[in-house]
Length: 118
Picture (cartoon, rainbow, N blue to C red):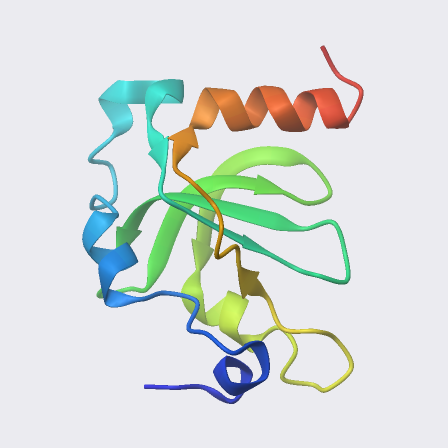
């Protein structure tokens, strides 16, 4: 199903192909920071970025790395991402169409460096 924001951004946040590549929740726990981040979402008008390593399609719930106020691992809902921008005052979240899968560690190191942390 297409949302209003899909037509604004010109693409779906979560395609069938990406969904098929995302393991179920808790499936990569044993990998730790070696888990592969399959998809990147971001807000074009702020500094928020969400990276997903796992997904539960029934609950539409991701697990992954979030770079917002803090850099942290946690859960986030697809609906929350889809709702950003519906108010007409903010720009909808987009999926990085050029993103290539990387490990959590690589992304954590990159964002810590960008934040000035060692």
